[in-house]
Image (cartoon, rainbow, N blue to C red):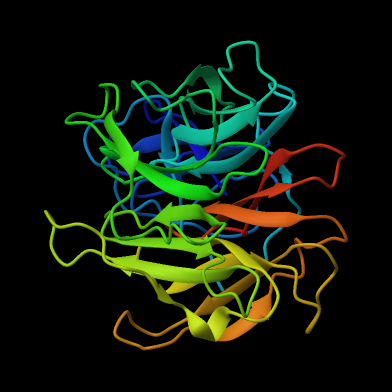
Length: 347
């Protein structure tokens, strides 16, 4: 659960033992008031049954500070909702990725008046993770948005590297491109095919996802003719080196399609979409998840479907928050391409 924080001086109903100027007026997202003291459990919280402790806040606390307690990642996600500010802004919107702080979005959209082609790359911002996105503009950079279709942007955590898929409809193959910039507020430059990663004989190299540190890239590719599309992983040998030729994440792949891989920053949990029919598959593309104990483990295991989010329509994951408590995904369950978010109950 996200909580907005406002400073106020100590007054009536303060939790006992709070030092001066340590009182915070806390309001849950649904508007129920709480009064809390830094370092103690919540007190005097209307309609709030669980105790939470605010351990510290870095720097001076101001209105709008947000406390995000950890959730139990073994618990299911709650009911999804459309991402505020990104519904109804295009005829189709997908591939939503976020910056590590959750305040900047990257995505592709179609049917907008500022589009160069049918699908172009966009960015949007918001003031807090509880507010709606706004300020939707094309991603800046010569050669980023062209007369071809650009989809599925993924940006490194430092905001300096952009990888995306480009296709020239109606019959040309889809491959991955890269662009960089020296500072996160400047336009991207140097757009070109991503070295080593593409298989130019394959029809599809798509749905790229950069791990937050930019040293690992996951993607889907049809380079294995025995399957449809499979998930691959490419790693960077050094901070200044190129990504290497991808290898298949074979434990996740089947004769069906596996696409849209998304990993947590620690690379221990992966979400992806598949149209496989085994397990509890609902039909079309469903979301699946697998985990591993460490990055030195050779394989992901404990593969299971994310049953609480899957429907008979398409669901494809696009981003998972750094703490694993929020999963963003694309679905056409409401008749059009719309981004959704589902969260786990925070402790």
